[in-house]
Image (cartoon, rainbow over all chains, first blue to last red; front, side, top):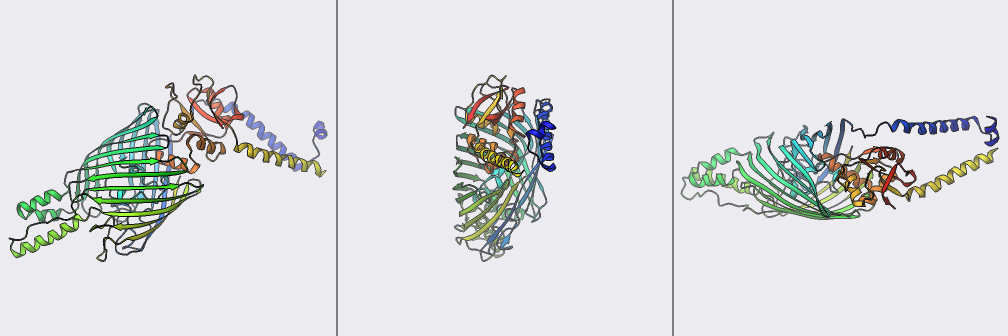
Length: 428
Length: 145
């Protein structure tokens, strides 16, 4: 004490206390490592709860139809209400369990607007994973389908720069997950890193309004190749699809003899082979990025065949990411049909036939034709949080309703509709 | 009476001022246990391991990455150097991985010393630390300037 008095300048009691505390902390720090060294292998926590959320608002300058991000939603911005939170808002929670050395399980539940307009949560992922080797993973249970470049993570707004993935490509996907098995294998070929995923399963969606969607024999693969900042993904999916929403219409057609039967068989979506193929390219050196993707869907039914594409890019300037995208979808199947021949029918039957022909004509415009020019800005204003503003000029082409729903009598194809959106994205 | 205290404060301030630029230009070393036969790794090989895209060293041995804590300047600099990703881009990357069930980020430790201690004892671990925390218990396999 005497020595200290001589070496250190005299201090107020408070300062002495501070130094004693600091010394005590230093001593603690010096002792602590002895305990830390006892645990050599890093402990893996048994469970982990995480989540993602998007709070978004979209405004449409037209009341003639609802703009939506998915065919599986009940309303959007426009006809129902010019300003809508239903287009992109959602909440997802995920529970990860580490069951044993190579076994893990995941449960992901998402709440977003559904066809019946409520937000009742649905199970997006629920599977058990067996990591056979560091390169090979096998999963059984519910798996989100890796269609196109981003289908399996398109609900995590924080993971991509836009407010939503381009609706021309992603909005039409009615079957988003499959109950079955998948295998993912990582492999290298020189400088190229490859990830190959194959899957098989089935999916059943009971539509809350009426009818159901059933996909049987859902099979396909997704292959991703990466070299430096460049990556490419090829995905192929095939299924036996039933979209049973208008059974009375097809029953009606079948009452008109051979021509009616032929039309019903041609357009009814009942265990029809459907397929989706896509090729996506991405170049992302960090300071900027460009991406492009093209996809083709075949349904062999009234749902139609289409080719879609988008191309876009952006700059990363500190916390700001301005971006622009062009997206387009074209129907490859005829959007008109001569329908039932009515010439030799008695008047009552001809009138009924004409009504069916009218409905068929409307049905065939379901195959969307549309193009959109988008521009926006993402702002990463805080860790794990981003605010994105986006402007979309959406133009349904030809006779199509495009990707719009709840179409009102005043709606005109070929007239552009402007959508302005703001989304707050969080991951936790 | 007051002069020595002011000197102390000035010294502390000076130390802080020197420490900040030193921090920003810190040399990061990627380390494995001194018992590990691997001698050198490329930045892209290190990135693959820390981004959960590879779980092996070039000799085929399985390896587990240890990370620094979120928000640590050393961590932000490390990922910028090996993968050209800013903290938000790393967050977006892991959001994609986690929510598609592809993987979980590496376990985090509070300091370079803590990383070094765990890596030293276990040849199946890899970490990165500030060069000043380097000692003979671990082997540097990549230096990031």
